[in-house]
Length: 455
Image (cartoon, rainbow, N blue to C red; front, side, top):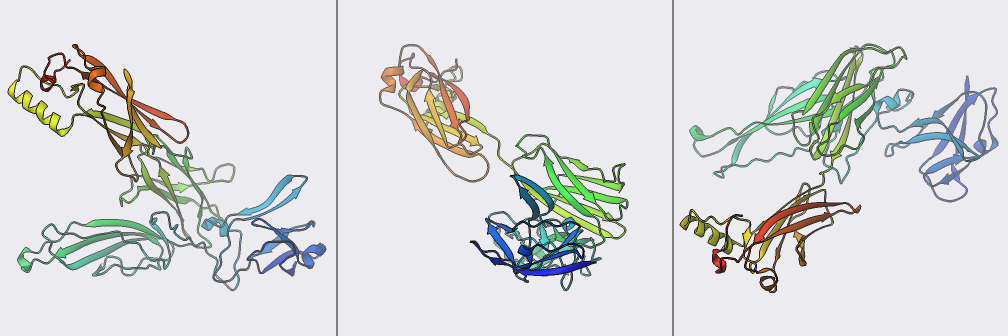
């Protein structure tokens, strides 16, 4: 039978910690170290340390916090001669982390807060406000006279939601029954004549309310393979599950691409049993080739006693890419088209330029290069940096105009001159991408306005 010893925390060295008390339970036969009994602990960075604590036998740990605080990333280890020995590690980020703990005078649960910098995920805690990212518009400018919000519900542990299937006129802002919810939303416009009022398209939104049960199975991990998914790669989702009673489990893995409501891939396991080693096999989902964007993975595990659910959000970064082109100014392009309409047998190709005209450069770069530059390889004195036209996710357009008064004299000769515009994207890690565009400088036919031929 364990004995409880309490020791108020007093930081006797430096720093501070939001720990009110440390309570340690040891067997009656064990002696409590004096440093614990007298509250001699200290803070080192984000760690709460006890001085020279060692004792035989088993120990239990009690964590106590105020209602406004949370506990996470618990790790207990010894450090001797530079060697760290971890005896307990619990991040408190998944429902499975609570399996080894019991709660008294309170309900222990895992709660999540959304990042201010991250888009709202499709998984919400009970009572958390739902972020509905829906908008209504009518091409005739008619106002909306009625809204329809209909929710389908797949229960987890709390049973069915009583209002599933009901047609609400306004969205439900908070849910307290766990499970998967599928919203179907539409609106009716108001033309002033009911005979002409129309119903909009139906927009769907899928979200989950996270719950938990002390007897239900849980998800132990979710990860991608490889760990960092790049655009264009083939990858898979791996998930681990566990259960106290080691019952047969039903597992479902769903992969969504934000903000879509239909999964891009799913896989279900029925009657998953433990292996010879006493563990459940890892569940896998083969994902389609990765596209740039944000993805959500939802893993649900069930047995006869209840269900557990967890999620993972990851991002696939835009791959490095570079596409470039060289065009005429609008005036020169109009001249080229007029020439082709008048002389069908003497076609002017888009890639033929008079040495004295400005070159309109454009490029589209992926992977967020720090700069994009272009130069004429055969005449390297003519070069310029391209300016980004916009910023944001996805490929970024760049543009510039390359011209100098000396180009006509330097390049203009009595024969066609093949040339290459080399575009180079420079990245922060020192990497580069190169795209070459072939053009022709030609004034061999004399008058500059007749110099667009195909070679």
